[in-house]
Length: 495
Ligand SMILES: [Zn+2]
Image 1 (cartoon, rainbow, N blue to C red):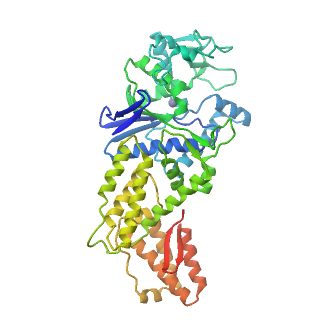
Image 2 (image 1 turned 90 degrees about the horizontal axis):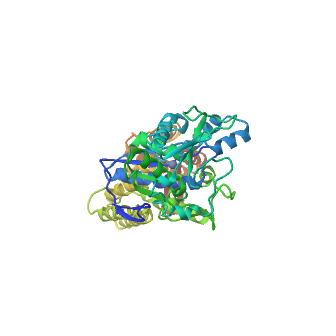
Image 3 (image 1 turned 135 degrees about the horizontal axis):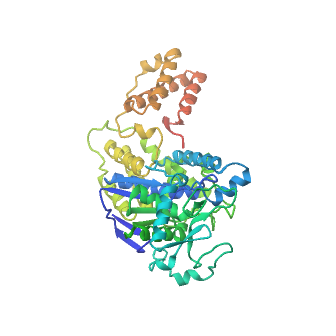
């Protein structure tokens, strides 16, 4: 497996230090709702984590929450609420968005305000070793003592100096020195420290938390490309100076940024699309496919057309799952192993999700062709389902559970004729119960749905439209959409 490492500027063989991959991704500063840029980054690293697990690695995944910061303090002041209240609101909003996007939860979400002792320990260690100095109640990092400062962003200290200056109120020795501990202003939230009341700087949070939860050397550190400098550069300087262990991070992975048209999507430009806004229009699967359709290191352009293309992509994938196998799983079968191999090859090449998705679409096409040609595709479809759901994190909704299976139950006319009145009520309740229960036998669920369709057809033939429509709307409430075609009624999942 090869991954592109920002530190070396090239693809490298992925060799984690042990059986367990230690992975850290910079988390949110909860002062507002998350936008598509956050969705992109967290979907990408979710898929990377899922893929590592799929390849047999154990993964320990940590994401911090910067719940104290200038932005939080300013916003809370504007709104006249406490920083804790503000942060809590947007942490809840963040988890709501992540769950809606089917992003697996990290193993730990340390919060800055709960990890202050560890940060003070690291800062004190840096002061003791001469890498940091207190001044005016704050503590600054001394970049000149780190000869390889700039190695991640591939810049020299001299080149960074252009335009850099010491701001009023800062008591730095050097313009590039950065703050580890900030003396607090009156009225701001603050914590006690050997240097007086204050709060941690942003960069030290990630060094302290990754050290505490994952150790001196991590395998993967991720984040957006906008974090390379100064945030990640400073994390390296802090962590390696404190522990004396190099490297702090074996593989630095950075995703490209989301653009709206030609411009970067950013709060300052006022062109943000929040995750909640996007989810009002598009399913989580469509948003995931949109993000995964391009190489994670490239910029991603958000547009209605791109999202609509993703929507039809989801429809194509879901359709495969609602097909009946023509043979009942017997006889000649479609071999999905070449597809699985290609999928792994793509993902092994620096997580080329665009190519891997292409393989999924090819497999979907092959399954449809097999179905048309009377060739069994049941095994191939379970490979399809596994890759789509386990690795890409697509839900493909209820049908996901129903896939990888059997011939649909043959329904006879007598059964259908009996399904009226109370029996019909029972059938619809049963469908609801079974669809919502993931442990239920899949064959049963599928059989019931097909039975309901048979009943609806026969009701329509008898011109009993009211109960027929009721079946449609009951199924609709379970996200099962019916499509009447000249060949009969097909069902699929709501996009
Ligand atoms: Zn960070």
